[in-house]
Image (cartoon, helix red, strand yellow):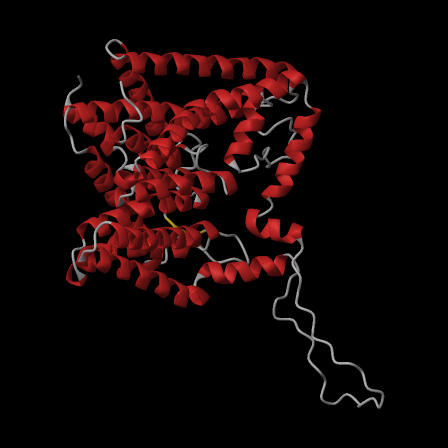
Length: 461
């Protein structure tokens, strides 16, 4: 059994994520280096998790299974590289390896966190409370960065033109947006657990600060994340109030969440995302305000013309997809075509980073779809995708079955809020990307999922 302080030190790494991301921005913008602080520190942390798994493999049957799985994953990626070195022209080995380093980060950390939480559980450490606290500290750092950078006028812009949005001192807008959406439910969990009455509703302040920072982003992910978390809090608290705990605490938190949801609805027209939606519609050539108005100076024609209602502006299916997926659907169509025409070996083991790309123009790089599950599927192929996703699917299905069977015991605010965090991660990864292929984001998802699995005894050594 490992020392408790060592185990908690590995978990405390969650708190440092925003600090590492700010240092990464400094590396890129001030020192202009390719290998950033974030890359180095996160690779070292992944190595530490691998060492944890190897150490536990001597005494744990489950850890040995995890190690064998990861060896198999290394073989799958090795076959992918060998196949594409012979079939892809051009082939950029460094870019391929960089991409696969991002892809393997989530499975390694997820399996490592499973063992980490199991050890903490054996030590009788309150790991759920510790995890919630570490997520809260991380959210406070993110909020402080956003607010200070905005007040000092030093915030980076999230968009180059037309749209409005800010990323604080964080370089990657998509990634920080996903991070904030995923940890927002945990700040709500902290608030609900601490708030006993309206006098102590100040525990919702961290949630409000993070929500305001998410609105600064000007993205659909940020706005949608707030709506989903508040709606989930209201509905779950109402169900608990009606079926389990008819207490002042539950009622107070439900009313606070409802008030915040109403405040968000009223403030929506003044948020960057509202402006950005209209800007996006303008780019697509859609003018929702354009209706034909009669000209008062126009001569009256004697012949009566039947009155007709002015046509409402119509949004085509293609325009709607572009509005939701921000052109990702076009890249997806291209990748599907390339995959259909790829040799059988590439269908089985994948086409690697960015598919069968042509030689890029100077200053440009091959592009991914930026929809994680599609990116992983086309890159790793049918067999590679199924192998990589097997642990995620296996444990997710087991947890859902456990949750449904024991619904009376499992329908609690901690389970619901952690579950909302994971559902948001899957949803964002599927539609906007930068979750399961971004180490800065996937570490949070790995911790959330592993905590749920271990606490529910879905993972048992």
